[in-house]
Image (spheres, rainbow, N blue to C red):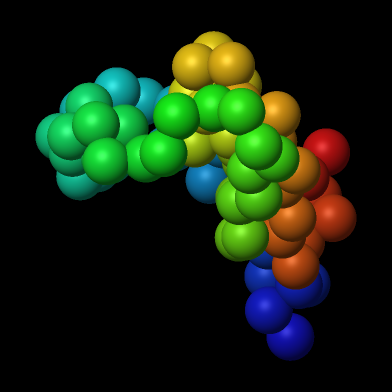
Length: 75
């Protein structure tokens, strides 16, 4: 069951996702935000995981609602 897997692996994923340079996100992050519409309307992030994109959107003044299938990831 995918949710059970993420319940067990959340701590590992958080460490991995928050390590700069560990995956491609850190390579394309700035370019990605160049094409994201400016803040002003509500923004939704589907499959937010531990929230790194949500945090980046929030720091750019987006009003974000983030959802994920794993409650432990959302916490």
